[in-house]
Structures are given as C-alpha cells and as structure tokens.
Length: 237
Image 1 (spheres, helix red, strand yellow):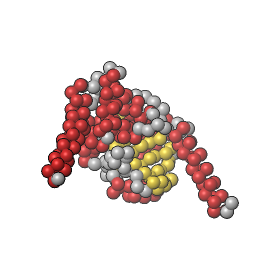
Image 2: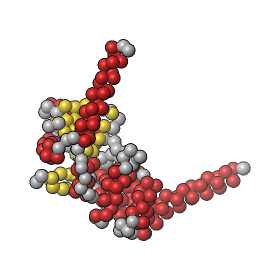
Image 3: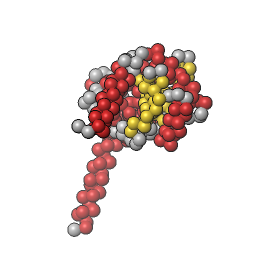
Image 4: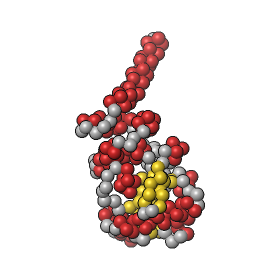
C-alpha cells in the first residue's frame, strides 16, 4: 500500500473516531457554555441564525440526550462565519461545502448547516417565524416548531429513526401554527402527511381538516395536472 493511501486511511480512521466522540461523549455543561459563546459572537457580528437539532428539541418537544450544536445559517454567511470562528480560536472544517461546515470549541462540535434536507434554507419565512427561547439565561433565536417538524420529516431515514419521534414530540406539545405548517409542507408534503396521519392514529391532537387540506393539496392538484395532460394529448391527436 502506498504511503498516500496509508495516510488517507489513517485520516479517515481519525475522523471517524472524532465523529463518534462528537456525537456520543460531549458533556452537556460544555455544550451550553459553547452555545452561549457562539450566540454572543453571532449577535456581535449581526449574523442571522436559527438553533435547531437536539438542543431546540429540548425546548420545543422532548428531553433527550444531545452531544452537539446544530445551527442553521444563510449560505451567503457560511464562509464569513467560519472565518470569524477560526479567528477566535475555534477549530474549523469545510466538511461538505454544498451544505455543512463544522467548528469545534471546548471539545464541542458545532454543525453550521446552510442547506438542510428537503432543500430547506434560512429563508425569510424561517427567520420571521423563529422563537426567542432562553438557554442558560440568554435568549437564543430558535427555529419554529413548524420548521423543526419539516426538517425532521425531510431528514428521516432508516439509520436516524429519532427524527420521526422528535417531530412527533413537537406535535404533542400542541403549539403549532397549522396554516404555516401547511405553507411549509411544500418541502416534503408526502412525508408530512404520513407523520400527521400516524400522529392522529396515536391520539395526538392533529385537526382532521389539516390532514384533509394537505391531502387535497397533494393529490387534487396532481389529478388536475394529469387530467390537463390527458386532454392535451387527446386534442393533439
């Protein structure tokens, strides 16, 4: 095996060890200390952001163990944010340049996400619906329950089943702007209707008319489009 291949394998092994630590072994006190420092930096530089992930879920849905910080930022701010953090002695990495940068401080991982699953960004809708929630005595701009749900259902996959139950836990709290949720459903409408129907079957309070409206928006428009296409084909023959 060439020296370059050995180095690549060693780097990959070290990265896997680091990733395991970041998601399994970080203590909560260090996470909170790093979060408060990060938000202070964002406020100083007037950077728009929305806290989501496990920390947001603690306030919006259910208590569960979390080991990192997930922050949604605007794509245009990503390089600027990384340069600021690097200048303040954060360790940084452009892990996936199309959607995710990483930073570390106090042995805590910060995921700087600028494109979430379902092509969800920190757009004007997300910003205008954020909630100010207190963490350690400091107000933090946190993603809305509705956008939290959409990100979770869009990200749901076999190896991350907790996303589904995180979304359900937010529905259980009942603090949902149903019209806004329907508005945001365009990012993963069929996944959302699956979640709402499942929640309804478990006696979680989801208004029946919301499910009906979502169903209609998906399938009525689809049927109308199919009928229009059929008519076009018929009259062109």
